[in-house]
Image 1 (cartoon, rainbow, N blue to C red):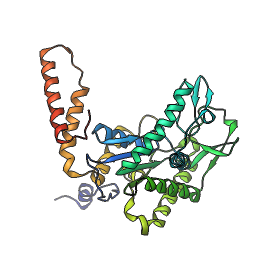
Image 2: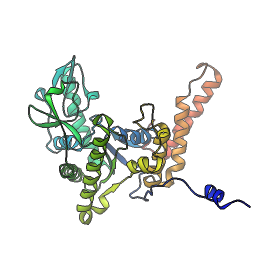
Image 3: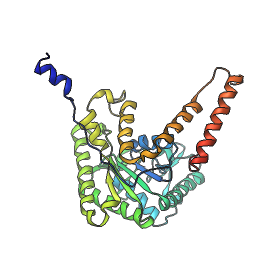
Image 4: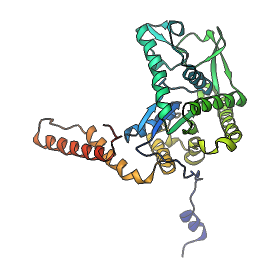
Length: 331
């Protein structure tokens, strides 16, 4: 007979599980999913793209701040056209304060074209989107002293040109509302899924990071509360931040920098997201896609061997079969 103490060790689950709701409308292979925001949204976006969903991921690069994202959505709403006045040259690269440094380019004309193509691609995709996933990373931002606007990225411009400030929950809430209204103006049937990035911005400071996340969370939930009567079924919240902080809450779920999430943590959050948002009827298709993806990643010892050619023929047949049943899947 086991002791009561041992019994509790056996049957008790020594962690708190964050409940995740069964959401709708479900994401299937007919869905068009746009993703914007911090580096965490790319973790989800990479999974969606791996399983061959039709997803547009951060067309302006990583954008951490809701006000910076709002500025870009204003450009979309205004049918703005970027020109030379919107870019600058530094370290042999042309950059724009509206977007991430990964958008920068050594050629001025190509940089302007890249910006305008991203605007048009985003506008067009949003008009067809079934779901938009937005992740906010921080309430801290850098305001350009020259014209007092928040920049999405400093692009290694001297810090003396900026003033660092934290935006209030009220300022953030207004930005979230404006982003949402622009999306619904383009596409009234779109579902917006909001999340808060669980990645901590410790360069701002430990206390400052917590204050930042608090402002984001407060603003987001206050916005959803205000629009509940009119747009209750058009917004949703996925608790990625809470899953990491309250459920995983261990450094083994972080990468070597102890800030970004490990692959194990990303996989765990993805499974939660999948259970909440992905249509169970396509789980078997996703499994087939994963098998094909692993086959495409396979590197043989001898590419010219008959065995490898046979492997490729079988893989090609699998791809043809799955695409015939699911025309939206593209390899």
